[in-house]
Length: 459
Image 1 (cartoon, rainbow, N blue to C red):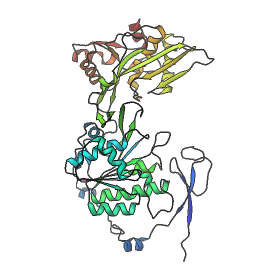
Image 2 (tube, rainbow, N blue to C red):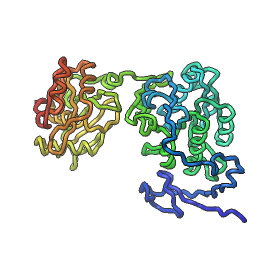
Image 3 (cartoon, rainbow, N blue to C red):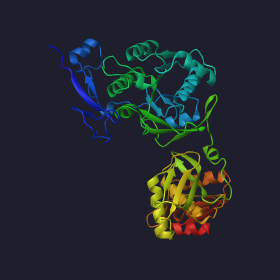
Image 4 (cartoon, rainbow, N blue to C red):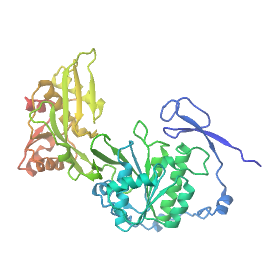
């Protein structure tokens, strides 16, 4: 009997599945994103056993008391910032997805990791579906010398790739990129929803069965998410995103999912001619070039995971020439800026309805932590009144709708970082003032309970 061919429509943005074409996706509300793909029926139990697939009917439930817990076997990448983001190193048998804009440095970072691991006598297999061997060699020559434990392969057929991986048994495999991989069992084109999902499933099985750590590079959409089905991020163990302007020198590596560590850690890198270099002290890096005695400028401290980062917040408030004032926020939430300006109008009495306002986080960082509220309010008022804030002063605290200043997490770590970099004054929430004054004697602690009190300091 002939096998019946079934067609299914997938959303290219989120992977939503439908039996018919739709103009708008019910999952992500995007328009004209459905594509038709042919789905072959899955093999039955008999076919699986004939194909030699393990676990076809042999799996049995295990009592939870019989499960033995062992610490994850990790090995060092020799890149401190990457180790921090991964939670201490590469876990054996893990599947890691690395996403980012084109030209941001994904392939460069992974090639550097491959170089350092190969020098550590670990077998690395770098598989590229986008570049030739000569192109990879040119980039490798810029990074440094490689050992013979580093192997290159240009291939897109996943069946061939699986056979080579099983034969060579490397410690680490790098796939660049998952959108170029082709699985013969799926009839759709490479990069489609079905191909990306099935290819990732094959790589996940290889990683878990053979204990091989696999890194896969994923292209991103214009919204900044990995192209393909959303289930791709659910299948992998770790999801890393490269952030930053590819025309600037800095790069931020952020973990948005990590089964073996924290999802709040970030790594800071600087793009150089020889590749990506670690930024061991990002606070100093972010404060380079800060103007002195300039209105609308103040330094705040944000906590990313366990790391405090000092960053300059700049505000520019000017009279508008339009019927509606313009608001713009770079690096922070636009709606949060509008909320804080409404609080300043209502609770402080500033007439900001006829003024344009521009907020910028210097250095290109993207932060949405509530602890930035107080510093943003002070920067807006400073620019509005053209009154500079002391250069050796930082401020942090969450601002509520009543104009109150609320406490934030880890205030002692923030003050310690400010003192280390030479700041003399810290404006903090009133609730943390007593504790911080007793812990820090060499820095002036000013506690404020409302935005009005913080504005009076500017005066």
